[in-house]
Length: 461
Image 1 (tube, rainbow, N blue to C red):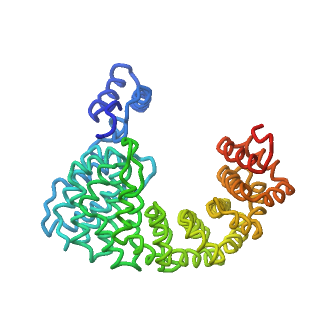
Image 2: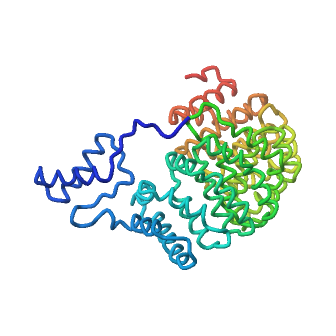
């Protein structure tokens, strides 16, 4: 595995400027036409223009680009006390430029002109006591790391070791922790080697330490880092190691610590992120059971009830997604049912009957609960799961995921429960399933399986 493909064609800033100049001098184009022609020609040739400053000759100079001006001034500076305030100002200006106008290309311009390596160097040399400038530098760095190529540049700059060192030394500061973990999240995205390096540096133990100390704190970057470290998102590798990382996370106690983080209340800004992080850790039956034993299911149902009462669809969706993952454990299925989970989910679906994103998550839970469990399928039908599927498929006929999840749920409701087949068929489910099968390619297989398990001979037609 290595850096991004070298087949991508690139061009230097000097060569680009020269092409524009030739268009003016040799072809007689006016400056604006010359610039547009150069961009169009190179784009058609498959040249990557990201990071190129495109300006009309005479109207601006590359060195006048505000991103480049900030970087040039930062390169000139020394880390003396007199420079720190100016450095903070320049870094904050860079953050504004990198997050400003969408499509400006400022991030690519910054990376192409040495910004990532420069800011890595600043972070490596700023003492922890200079918290303000360090936080600004970390914010800037997290924005500059935006694709696989920039994550490789971060790795080559010894970035993983640098950021882990900062997190260890600055673990008393919420701002350093949040911005430092934002860098971890950005750098590990789509890069298996960076993930591996961070794990070798025992980032998992650091995460646990911070979670235990800041269980009620809002460190968004921390939860994002857990999610990214445990996501197999590097398409350059055949087999990712993230499954093993998740087991390691759970073994040292991160799953249990995340459950405690969930107890911070519905209003906590980190509730959804913590739910997503916990879902990423829950990769096998043993871990799912341990989360339940730590009170995870109880906490989830608390927020499912509260989010329904308060109309908080974002929390409802996140909690249902997590519960669906935990329900994969047979012992957790029993616990969910014993806690009146089926009725709670039907009530939630009624409260969010106009939100397909919540309904599809609810149906995903029912699909898992009813898998190889005719007793749960009977309970679900009695509570109204069949009606939920029919109403959702009728109301949201254009929402593919609702249609697919409905098909999957219906199959599990009927495959071992003949009495459920009769009920659903009498309510017109065959026509609805066939419509979904024709209308949505993603539903074809699931709808066919549902029609077959409803006992219909012509399920393939």
